[in-house]
Amino acid sequence: MSHAAIAEKRPSQLRGASLPKWSPWAIAVGSLAAAVGIGVVGGLDSRVQWGLIAALLFVFGTYAISARVEGRRQATDRVATSLVWVAFLLAVVPLVSLVWTTVVRGVKVLDVYFLTHSMGVIADTEPGGGINHAIVGSLEQVGLATLIGAPIGVLTAIYLVEYGRGRLARSITFFVDVMTGIPSIVAGLFILSLMLMFDMQPFGFAGSLALAILMMPVVVRSTEEMLKLVPNELREASLALGIPKWRTILKVVLPTSIGGITTGIMLSVARIAGETAPVLLLVFGNPFINNNPFEGAQASLPLYIYQQYANSAGSGAAYDRAWAASLTLIAFVMILNLAARGIARWKAPKTGR
Image (cartoon, rainbow, N blue to C red; front, top):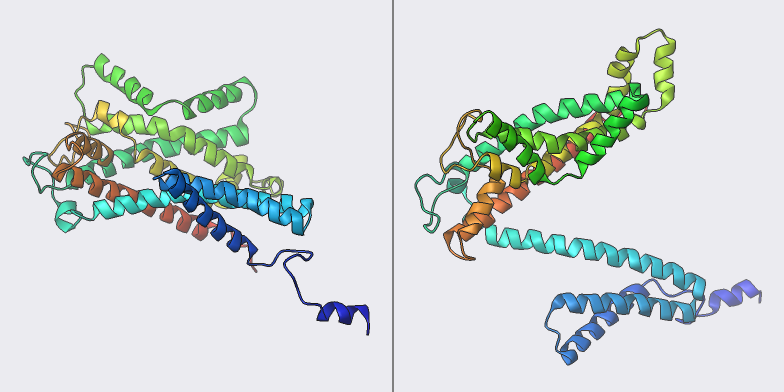
């Protein structure tokens, strides 16, 4: 009988050349059980502590078992894979917990009435009222900020990638980097100082200006990276045909990268949609619906959430309204992200024949 036939008849064992496929799951279950036992014996009541202990036991257990069965080289590879999974769970578990808590607490008062009515004269401690005024304010403020910030950001990125050379381009890049890291309250204070200079009262458009300042560097950076991904061969082929550079940018470069540019704009919109500090300084809030962003105070969803939670003392009608508004804001941001993905896929260059 040949050696190959003998090897085929030899039964697989745990202490072979490699661990079975189910071994990571078994190690994970054992680590979790051991962590629970350590937590109970040690008097640890927090599930977070149990999870951290289980993660450490899983990593060290994987290395110990794999090193004994498969050798140190394969054990190192398994530990690296285990660390990736642990990092993934550490990122996902708080996110899932946050979304679950928001959904459970937000659905208590979230209904059609809540979405279609404003607070009006209802006191914060009384039940009833809605967020229609805050939705209108957020849509108008974010929409105006997008109309201001997106074109300026895209045009700035086009200049930096296609034309920018020398000291001016380096200065613009430097200031874009600085603007990317400024706190949102600084943008609000800048617009507020201009309002005080001209003796202006709070109004929705002032909040849009502050949000546009926060939006522009994000759009510049994302658009710049998308434009750099366009192959230079496309530009050279267009220019070789005698087409002007501005037309090459308009007809070749932008259509090729429009999916990524749109995604960057949508993500920047989702980022500014949850800003509270600039709106608190410049818009002040309004319990009634104000459809004119250029006159009078307005509300917004982040500001509404802050005001309701601040006046709730951790319970009551205002507390429930704050969670319901938070759920609405999360849904709004999720819709924007899904729209960005859909537009990016729709506008992506077709590679098939």
